[in-house]
Each structure stands twice: as structure tokens, then as C-alpha cells.
Image 1: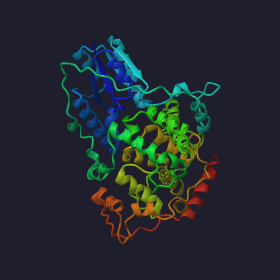
Image 2 (image 1 turned 120 degrees about the vertical axis):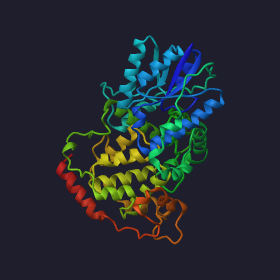
Image 3 (image 1 turned 45 degrees about the vertical axis):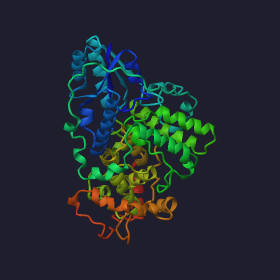
Image 4 (image 1 turned 90 degrees about the vertical axis):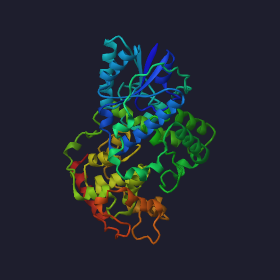
Amino acid sequence: MTSIWWIRRDFRLSDNPALVAAAALGAVVPVFIFDDTVADLGAAPKWRMGLGLAHLIARIEALGGRVVLRSGAASEVLLQLADELGAEGVYWNRLYDKAAIARDTAVKSALKTAGIQAQSSNGHLCFEPWTVETKTGGYYKVYTPFWNTVRARSVADLLPAPDVIWPQDWPKSEALVDWQMGGKMQRGAAVVLPHCHIGEAAALARLDAFIERHVEAYKAKRDFPAEPVCSGLSENLTYGEISPRRIWHAGWHAMEAGAAGAEHFLKELVWREFAYHLLYREPDLAHRNHREGWDEFDWRGENDDAEAWRRGRTGVRFVDAAMREMYVTGVMHNRARMIVASFLTKHLLTDWRIGRAWFEDSLIDWDPAANAMGWQWVAGCGPDAAPYFRVFNPDGQAEKFDADGAYLRAWIAEGEAEPSETALSYFAAVPKSWGLSHQDRYPEPIIGLKEGRVRALAAYARLKP
């Protein structure tokens, strides 16, 4: 029997339920499809997905297999491949965003109509959205009771990588290079690449290093962006180079061993689960305000201040440092994400969807659920949102979480006698058309922090959320 393993965001061999299911039945043909969900990705996540896919292809080829690459509508591609191979089943791990659900529903229907087994599994979450409900049968809109509910649940054991039988004959495959998945990164790709940790082995090493060296101090130091105590696993989770179940078990074992920061680390992992819980129930979370009444809020649309924010040229050092960190590394510290989002939506009164879209284009760890919920949470219009009157003061945040200025120096070169290499890398990553140099004078603030706070509170008060 021949089965198709449809690869999506599960670039790993271990703890991969879809691969295990396919391998149990006979020969396995791994397939990746370049469809609209891939084509529509932003510049950085599409580029990083291409890197992860190339790494997985090389790993499978080292084991004697191949990955068949095809482009087009998934249902059509899979039906054609199943016919070419005489495949009796297609196996994949579920995704939970609106586009993926619509696509997968159509695929499953088409395959079953053709008499082909279609089986999806859970390889992307610890707790699937429909399995967590309130006592009244609804879904959670506040994080803490969600955490209290899932904390008491067991998480499935890990699945070892299966012994895979490959087919004797392989169907034709397109070439990954022809897809140009990194085309929009331009010169930024060379700058970001050294900061990437690509593939399953790198992800496992990251987890081991975090548990061994940093989990103890995680709760106490996680908000200090210059402290290297975060796991960095969001990048690998995004492409399924590591399973959330593996991270859960590692964190749980560390908690049982007495590591002070382990439970808080698990809470951060469950925050991602909570985001998917919401996205599944509210498919338009990335585009529509969660809270009633917020459609009346007078957000600013595109504006020059928002462009200064995107370029890391607001004149507010903590905000600019964070935006430049994203340009250079493709990621941003979580505390910094909250600060830049608050500055855009509150000090600049700019629509949170403008910020969400920029993150969607710029982050190599972009996640459809976490990104949407995070932006709405900070803006005040989302589930379990930060109070509307909570306006982060970037200077105050810098004093509290970067008292010695290490984070600011790491990312801002202007005015420094000997700028750091990372700060200089920003000028190598941004478009040449911006005409920027580290010898430029650092810009004046585009708005006074006190002025921006007063204006934001007045606007929010008119809404009366």
C-alpha cells in the first residue's frame, strides 16, 4: 500500500502523527504543495518556510527518500498524485486558521468522493480547540480559566520517528528554487540568515539548552530583552520543526524537578494554545475587532507616523530598537512586541491591523493566531485585552527592563562612537532606497510620550469600551 504524507507546517520526523499513520500502512510519498496559503505568505515567513522545507528535503533524501513538490490547488494536486501513485490514503496534520480549514475540508471531501482515505491528525497543538470548553459549553475568552482547565489535563506521549519505506518509483517533482520563496527578502535575507535556527535538530538543541541553562531564571528575567533567557522556539514551532507536546513535556519535567521558571514557561506555551482556541472560534480574528463597539473607534489609517514606526525611525529609542531587531533577526523580544504595538495603536492611534500586517510580513516566527490575538490584546479590542487605559511608556519600560541600555545599544547605531555589529546590520538589511546611514543624526521623537498618552486616553474615553 502506498500513502501520501502531505507536509504543511510539520517539518519534522519525530512526534509526527500524520507521518506515523502513513508509515504504518506501507510506502510513504512525502508531498509539499505550493498553493494559495503559501503564495500569500509575507516576505519573511515565506522565505523562512522555504529554508525549513529545503532542510527537510535534504534530511529525507539522506534517508533514501524524496519530497515531491507540486504547485496548484491542494485538492487537484492530491487527487492527481494519488492517481499517479495508486495511493490509497492521504495523511496530514491539522491547521486551524480559516483558509486552511476551508482548503482541508474541500480536500477531504474530494478524496473521499474518489474512494481515497483522508485522515488528519493533531500535530500542531497540545489541546485542540473543540476539546476545551467552559462549563456551559462555550469557549474561553479569558486566558486564566483556560490555563486552569488545560493545566489539569494530560498531554499525549511523544511518538518516535517511524521507520519509513519509500516507493521504488517516484512521480515528477517541481524544483524548490523555481518557487522563489525568498524573492521578496532582497538583501535582508543575508542579514537575517545567521540568526535563523533551521530544522528539527536545531530545534531540539534549542529546547535542551533552554531547559539546561535558562528555565530556572525564565520567570524572573523573561521581560528583560537583553537577557538571553527565552527559548527562541517560536521560530521552530511556526514550521513544526518541533512539536508543542515535546516542549510541554520538557517544561513539565523541569517544573516537577523544581525549576522556578518552568510553570511560567508552560503558561507561555499555553498562551499560543489559547490564541488558536480563539482563532478557531473566531475565524476573522486577524481582521475584525473581537470586542463589540470597537468598530466605531476612530483609528488612523496609513500615515507618515506609521511609516516611521515601520522603519524604526520614530525617535523613541526602545520602539526603534525593537523594530530594528526584527529587521536584523526576523524576530522580536516579546516585551518589545508589546511596547511597539502599544506605541503604534495608542500613542499614534493607528489601526492595529496595520501593525499586524507588518509583523505578518517581517517575522520569521509569524503565527496567524498569536499575531492576531497579540495585536488585539495590546490595542484593547481583543479577548482578555489589556485595559484601554494601559499605555506603555517606552522610556519607562526601558528604565525598568533595560536599565543599563544594553538592548538599546545592541540595535541603535546613531550617536555611538563604536556601534555594535547588530546595530550596523540594520543599515545593511533595509532597502537602499531609504538612504540611511549609521552616521545619520538620530531622529527627534515624532510625538511626545506624555502628549501621545493624553491623546490616546481621550480617544479611548470617547469610545467608552
